[in-house]
Structure formats: C-alpha cells, structure tokens
Image (cartoon, rainbow, N blue to C red; front, top):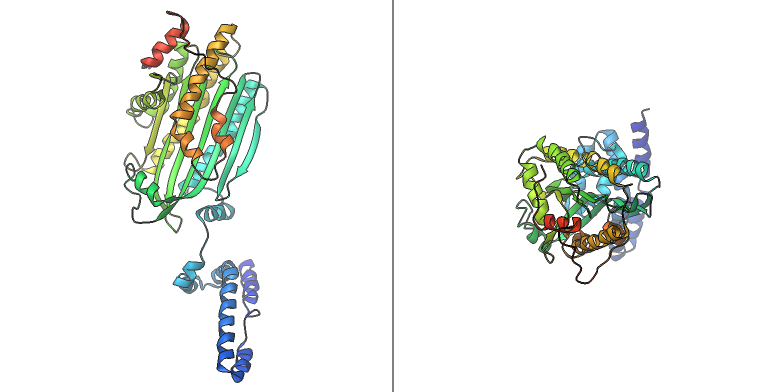
Length: 415
C-alpha cells in the first residue's frame, strides 16, 4: 500500500461519524416526540459543522489521495464552506514555505523575503569582518503575521552604531487607505472595504566612529496587496542607497555614485539620472534648505506601469548586491584616518541633521511607527548612538565644513 493510500485510509477512519448522532439514535428520539426529534437533528448538525471545521484539512488530503478532490472542492466552496476558510494571507504563505520551500515559481512576496534575508546575512558577515565585533541579532514576530531579524552593532571598533534589519509585515488596508493609495496605483480595487497586504524590506544604516568615514543608508522594499485567494492584486518596489559624509572626499562620492550607475545602466540608462535626482529631492531637509547627504539613488512605486515584475525584481537585486562594492572600499580608506576633537564635534552636528530628517520627513519611519503592532526599536535603529545640536552653529568660511554645506545646498552630479 502506498503512503498516500495509507494516509487516505487513516483519514477516512477519522471521518467515521463517531461524534455525530447516529440514525438509530435519531429514530429513538423521533419515537419520543417531534420536538425532541428536532432538537436532536439540530444537535447533530452543530456537531457535523464543528467536525467539518476541525477535519477540513484531513478531508482534503484524503480526497486528494483517493482521486475525488474535484467533487469535494465543489462541496467545500459552497457558501457554508467559504465561511469556514479563515486562513490569513500569512497562514497561506507559511504553508507554501513548509510544503515546497521558495523557488522561482513561488509568489513574488516569498521570493523577495528570501532574497533580502540572504543579503542581510551576507552584509552582516562582511561588516563583522571589518569591525572585528559581532552584531546582536534579534528575531521577532508580529501578532498579525510576519516578523523579522534586527541586527545591531553598537560601540564597535569601526562602527559607533550599525543596523541591518529585515522586516516582513502582513496586514489589512482599510478602505480610506486604499482610496489614498489609488492616487499612485490605479490597479488597486476601489470597491472593497479592505485588502490584505504584504510588505517586506531590508533597511540599513551604518554610522562609523571616524568622522572621515561617511554614514551610509540603504533600503529596498516590496509592497503587495492580495486577493482573497492569496493571488497578487497590486504590487510595487521601492528603495535606494545614499551617502552622508561629515567630511567630503570627492573621490568617495564619485566611486559610490559610479557603482550605483553601473547597476542602473545594466537595466535602463535613464534610471541613474532619474533616481539620482529623486534621491536629492527626497533626502532634503526642507527646514534647513539642504540635502541630508551627497546623494545616491532613490525611487518608489515602481510597478507594472514602469516594467514587468520580473525585470523590476532583477533590478532591485542588482542594486542591493552593489552595496558592498560601493561602500566597503570607502570605509577601508577612511576608518583609520587621524582626526581632531573639533572634527569629531562637527560629525556630531551633522548627525543631528540626519536625525532631523529621519524623524521629521522620512516616509518610511512614519509608515513604520503608524503600522499597528510595529517594532519601534527596529524602526528607530537608523538613529545614531550620539548626536548634538549646537545653537546657531555656523562653520568657518572657506573651511572643509563650509564646503560640505555648500554642496548639500547645491547638489552635484558626481558621474
């Protein structure tokens, strides 16, 4: 007997009406009174419904093994059967991963989750080699589905604070949120009261100790709404990477931008100039009249109106993979350079500007903090360990500090 047949036999035995009222028992009750008969029938129906609820998966497995899945499927998708299907999108995805893992044929949300988790491990491993200390790794889960891994290194040999986090979020968008999002995504169904959604991303901010070594930020993410059957309804990618030095070395900015340009050009030569401009405009402290850093690339809402999903995913992969070659050579050159107390003080002042942008203007921070059940520590891991705000501080004219401010007020095209 095959394994499938043995399983089918076992489930068939489980399906015997042990817990329901038998025909003989009903006949006995009917002889008592019509009212008693009606009560017994009602009890039997309730028990059958309870049994169906608990036995639904075994029923399906047995039916599949016996070759009668088609007719059973028709039965289970009646109005009564549909009411019993309460599996969430997170539950369905977890089952897919358990049963078949993640392959090129899996839903994009599972492929994106797998990719960013792999990249997180690789990046953390390489950064630990540079610093000599290990990241603290915190695994966490969300009540409504999803979770992530937050890796943080504080007070290391090279990094004052470094955070590399993966977040996976399942939830439900209410109708007002759907209507608002339709301004950028016309494929969202406006005729539903809510939509299941999935969001996954890798976020990273590295704050080196040495003021000559620049801070760097990276984020790549995927957002999807789903139909009731778990299929994709609307989707889009976003992300980018940007450099924030306290002291500007032109060769560093050129190398960083050149590496990003190569990743962009391999997909579309219009991407880099377009996304570089987008980066300068987005990472802009409006209240200061200056950019947060010297730029990089930034984009959001890349959906089917731009390119198909497979090509956009390939673009995201190349951009994320370009991070280590774009940043590590800069870090290696600057991490051991000598510096003065005054230069360290300037680094702290620039970090204060970094904090201002993240807390006042950054949409990702706002989205995270306003998502029910979010993990605040993971969202705010991007903030530096130390920063300062000196009242009415101005750099000396024609100094290196003033040159940085001049560039931040009038962004340059580095390549």
